[in-house]
Image: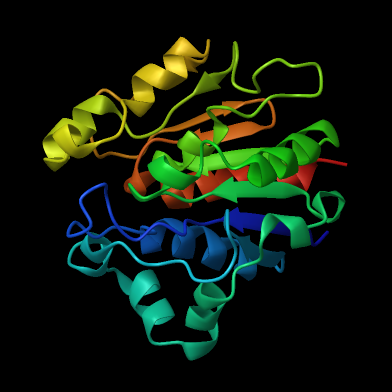
Length: 231
């Protein structure tokens, strides 16, 4: 059965320092999009403000720029998707079976406090859909509350880009907050792999999270498996 999946991407193009560019980590979108497309699922992109989603420059260099990401860059139709993302007000959450939060450091600025994205996420979760995120995408789950007021991540097993990985990436001092610590402070049961920058996926019911860019394909596979078994 073909399903509908909503990808969340960023609108932010730089850190607090305007000279430090950032954006969507391209392969975190493309690996999932390609896998879902191969299974015949319908997919759309949404961002907190709608419109253009910039690309993280580091994701456009070796080794992050793999075959999947290169194919997107060379396909005008797919690049146009990143120029014309939906705004939350134009999304009918009832039409989607899953939501997938992409990453890139940029999302730390615009994902957590987007009320429109939070509403879509809550609605998809409460109608029995799948909520998923990879790498920094889990920042989009930090402040999402269910209809009863409880945080979606409270008491749930999750993973996402670790503070150790931030330090190793050389950008920890420029981060607006420690996402791993913020997730734990919200009552989430944070997990990470034994080694940094290796695939790690955590599945807690209909909540699926991947730790880092290397986890994007595995995260998508876990979502696809749940889609096959859900009603």
